[in-house]
Image 1: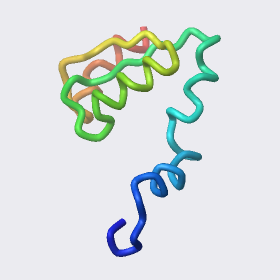
Image 2 (image 1 turned 60 degrees about the vertical axis):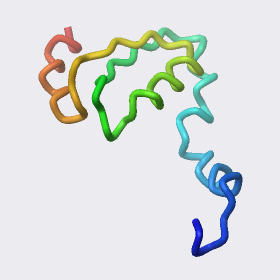
Image 3 (image 1 turned 45 degrees about the vertical axis):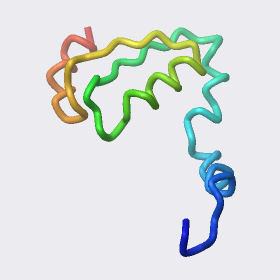
Image 4 (image 1 turned 120 degrees about the vertical axis):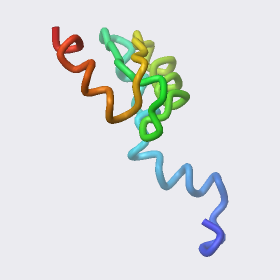
Length: 78
């Protein structure tokens, strides 16, 4: 950003087409369940919360990180 002299607003505008929050309101008429990890460093918990709020999704938290979430896959599929 600094090398290109971009502002925070310009970066936000550039990323908007790929930001899930841009489209979250479209999910409000659906029943969405999100299953997220409390210690995720890839899909950050605060980002998951923002998406859940914006889409009115239900969210379940698992005591895991991004990779150890695989332990919860069998239960999630049931």
